[in-house]
Image (cartoon, rainbow, N blue to C red):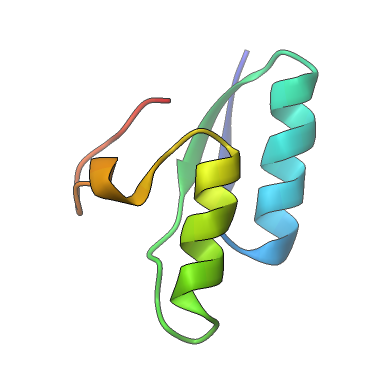
Length: 64
């Protein structure tokens, strides 16, 4: 099953995505990586999920 998670680089979204991946779900994560919170922290969270910053192409769909 595919699940869309918005705000996937934020605190709550990151933890939701992490748990869903552990349970075997296919996740489509959406986040605009704005600077309201620390951008470095958002990239670190995405890295923990398997997506490195240098692989991010803005406005393009990326699969992990």
